[in-house]
Length: 136
Image 1: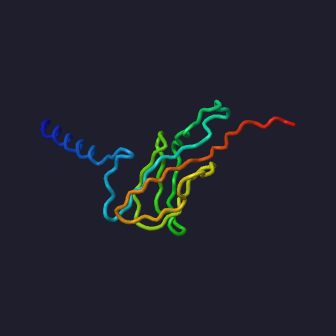
Image 2: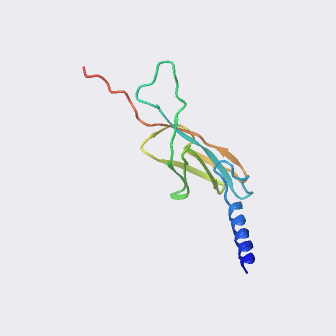
Image 3: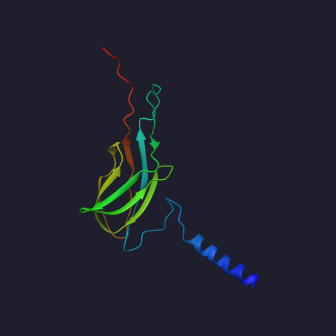
């Protein structure tokens, strides 16, 4: 009886592990869906940056991205701690809404997706960090 329970537990454990996909390593989209993935970063990286050094942007973690079709939010995804995200959507045209106070500097705010396609949509946001202007 103990061996039967151990085998049943092992089967359940291995079946559950096979269903998980790491972000960014998802399988190819099915013929019925389109796959969208990317990274969200923000600039500037600090109020005062050294002259001559550039910052590629800091990852934006826990940012909600909504895919709106018509007047309905069709799907939502949240960035991980590295600013990465991945989502499978039905083919169609979507307005992309980043739920944040930051302004979108670059990245598509509208996507038209075909069945079985893979799209990379990276975003750069302006986080509003500014050096105070001296009083005149």
